[in-house]
Amino acid sequence: MSQSKSRDPDVLHRHLRDVQELLSRQRLVDELVHRQQMPHRDLVESITHKQNLARLQRKLDRLHPADIAWILETLPLADRLFVWQLVRADKDGDILLEVSDAVRASLLETMDHYALKAMALGLDADEFADLAPDLPPEVVQAVLAALDQDEQAHVREAMSYPEGTVGALMDFDLIKVREQVTLGAVLRYLRRFGALPDHTDKLFVVDREERFRGLLTLESLLVNAPERTVSEVMKSRAVVTFRPDDDAGAAAQAFERYDLVSVPVVSERDRVIGRLTVDDMVDYIREESEAEILGNVGLREEEDLFAPVIRSVKNRWAWLAINLITAFVASRVIDLFEDSIGQLVALAALMPIVAGIGGNAGNQTITMIVRAIAMGQVEPRALGRLLRKELGVALINGLVWGGVVGVLAGVLYGSPGLGLVMIAAMTLNLLLAATAGVLIPLLRQRFGGDPALGSSVLITALTDSGGFFIFLGLATLFLL
Image (cartoon, rainbow, N blue to C red):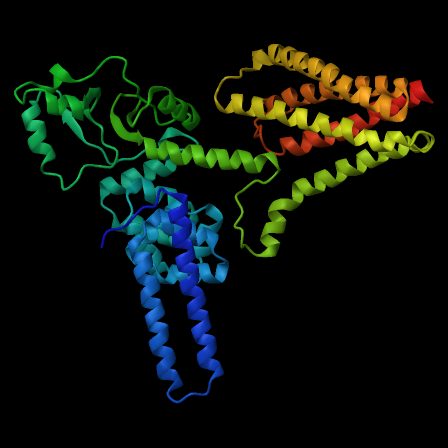
């Protein structure tokens, strides 16, 4: 049976509603049958149960593994595990590769060692290497023992490279041809394959020692005469290649810059050992984007929406504790100026404006810097130029928007002095936000940390405490 892959979000949500409706119907039938003391209740329950299961199973059989993975992530834990049991075994591996790490853990817990081994044996070497860290060691060893020597070598090689490198993402399923053969011979060779590897837009040309010589695009193969040799039509200059220890982020930028579909991965001796494909890069970019979004609010890992409460608490508590400490510091700053606030009540109404706009400006700066770091556009020696530029932006924004708020405050409270204090406080807090917005991610990067992790928490804490201190301090000095 063919599997449909939903590209339209509306279609995907319709699939989800269909699954949820079938699950609800299953629960309703079970409840009604148990409530009514009818003759042959067990028989009725068995028939209706099997009918609903058959409908749900047919629905799942028609869906692409990526769509099933999305549905599983969206369902509560009990429904997720119920649906997971109905998925065909030959789809298990593809689905596990698609779901998030948190959801994958909940699915793997339901599988015994025999099922895990059967699932793993159906995967390619690079796919198995991706899943291996999540599998029990005895299952990994059993799978490796069942593979031939070449497959074992591929798996061990893929597992040997650190996360975030090209080697950890590369695919071993590729086609190599010799440079001295004719295009006709290449065509006859390709017809021996049942199907070409996914995302095959070019063949990799090697010599007798398997060293990389160039690329033969499928277009060149098809439009040139069969009598011509590969060396005559292959591309050997200005060819993009990667080493297995290259940074995956830099590879992703190359794919985007040059509109690549597949790229050879070569060893130090120029031997072709694998390839990197556009689907690998899309997955990598998506995962990095999700990690950055989570890191901005202090989450270290993606969280299963329906995970047990204690697991979610452990994922969130660290930066909440930091936030609590910084909030306490901000409250102590306010407490220092209790007498000033008592004498001029307007300060209590205006100080959140100073802190709020500083936090927003700081988050804008951090977002720009973190993005530039991810794109490889920021080097340590650029710190001075970046800081001067952001301080210039902050100064202009502070004077303009501080002026607007200062005029309004002066008119509302009949105090031109209060308006001037607002202008000065907003300008100074924006300058503080710009400085912190540049320094926080760059310093975290310099000391080997994640530039995005907790950055929004830190900048908000700094601009809150700093904003309160600057505004209340200036008001105390010049208005009281």
